[in-house]
Image (cartoon, rainbow, N blue to C red; front, side):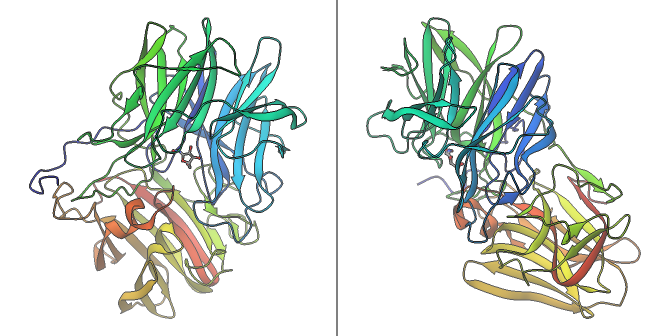
Length: 497
Ligand code: 6LW
């Protein structure tokens, strides 16, 4: 048992903070591009750009049209879009991904500009499983490698499989879940990088090499080449990696990791985030260095006044985003959400949110309830969310934890627009082992700019260790009845005033 009086060491920073797992990276000239999984959210597959591997800007979502991504209403939370691979070949970007949803499966989209537009999907019905990878041989043969670890040749222009899938490698004997394969030609070898041990605390990265893309492969004697299992490192669950070479010849790994906080067993609330590590080579095997210092701030802190006709790329909705239910065009300068589902418990809730990217943060929104009821929510999934909801002259804080749904606080409010807010409770010491990972205070802003807290809730119930699944917290606005208008949404790290 760990010593409960021991406090958690200082955290290391990701390069892309918040729920941005399963990173896949490629470089073209001086430009790096990176994509992540997006699960039940729409649009899907955020695309990032960087020149230095540390500072990343989101430039698109690859799956942003209903013709590219249809997530049926019965797509469970943590179903949907899994583990893309991004490659540049023959003057085009190729993105292959699994959509875990009715009518989904493995598919690929292409673009000449990673900022879009991306093509409609080419389906790959003959590619089984999840985590597909793409690699090309010198003669143009395209190898698709998938979790398990298996492989099949494909024609990426038609989606046809050429021959039957064959088993490639099972990873370290006895290790769970060999997955996330990436195949590379580096020097005289073909390298097969995989994740194993499961995407939880046992996660790690292993590698094998051979002289042909379809094996046989010889495992690295130093496997796993990366894992934080059983260590006191503040970043845990490290795995699901991809390699890239910089223009100066140095090698780098992007990988996912989580930042658990609080007492035992530790809760992480931001989902799996993207980290960076340097790679050197010894005897033809990669050696992964300590995680690089990342950037302390995520991509998109700040205020959105909803003055643009199109929503910014970081906004995501649950499963779909029909324009007649979610638009900045209906009332200029405002976001209008029209209710479909009646609450965040419903699969078809009208919701627009952004990933939580900071450990301490505050979000506020100015809401006009003259035509409906709605609010501000922190969502992990349908069964795990907290929200502050207003309408009919009342404001209430609601907590949904597993099968339990309860109104925690209720208060009358005067008619007219209202500022709703949620913030991490700064009075809670974040590294106190007796507490959860954080505490969230929900309230309303007073006329003089003060903040009246209606309820403070333990953040552990909106963590992956409680809720399960592959995602992280998303903070946003929703409509519960009628039409609800939002003048602005502000999200930022401290100071809150
Ligand atoms: C993904 C698998 C994994 O498909 O988690 O961490 C799964 N690795 O490779 C969901 O992201």
